[in-house]
Length: 197
Image 1 (tube, one colour):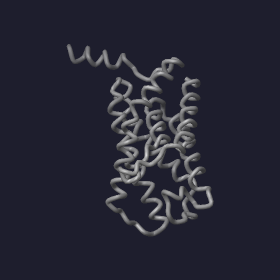
Image 2: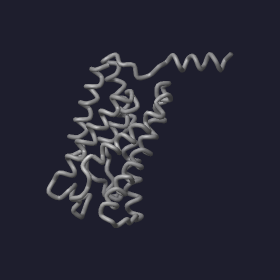
Image 3: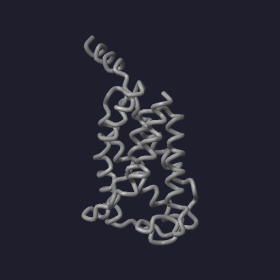
């Protein structure tokens, strides 16, 4: 159990590093593949609530440290105005909310229906991006939702969701390597028995 969680933390660290090298897709309103939220969401559905909350704290803390502690107050290509009053730690709450969303469909995931979780990663990232934008605009005091912002958010969620099967595949390999039970085949076969009777 613990080796799998350490492996997931290692994947999170790798996602933070690789995120720096993922370019924006200019043809899709500068949408980005968000590796860190993607790895977090896929990992959140494979673990119980306490490890998920620890991952949410780790990811939110690192995300805020990376984006809020600079001299500009965030990534200059994303935030054009200074955001000195943004509360440090708001990402921890957003990551925890996304994690609880994934925990809600964990029974389906445990039965082997990982594709539902893959679709939910796109929905969760879309909600995360809009929640983050609303927090930033609330602090700035100017709520403006444009068509390009909605398209950028939608395309970012869609692009990120496309890569979720690959992340699930890596997590399944890690789970098999460390003998961590991700799926419960017994539930699936028991349901089949009940239906056939």
